[in-house]
Image 1 (cartoon, rainbow, N blue to C red):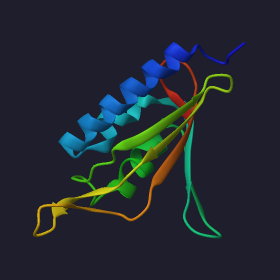
Image 2 (cartoon, rainbow, N blue to C red; image 1 turned 180 degrees about the horizontal axis):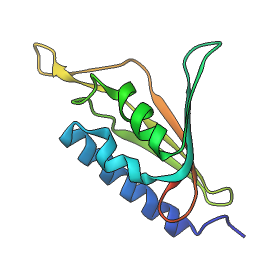
Image 3 (cartoon, helix red, strand yellow; image 1 turned 45 degrees about the vertical axis):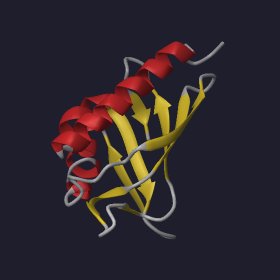
Image 4 (cartoon, rainbow, N blue to C red; image 1 turned 30 degrees about the vertical axis):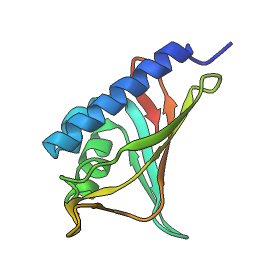
Length: 131
């Protein structure tokens, strides 16, 4: 039996992508994305070979992961190129790019080389429990 119905996780992804677009348009990552995490969610990422950033709870996620760490990236875009769903474990892998808000002289966009990735665990109620 799956952790959550696939249709529910697909709806979560739809809501997540919509909230990302709203955040990109507004230049505010907290307002649209904060409530996408459960009250006791955890959000972490690697900051090098010996450092890990961890925000525990929605408040820390809003203040640090979506707030302080996103300062200076208000006009950046993070389009998702691929989403992989594991409904048995209730997890999603999202592959995205980082697109800068400036263009080259020929009109093409600057992007950070390579792809970014996020690994999410769905916690029900259309919220992530872990990222």
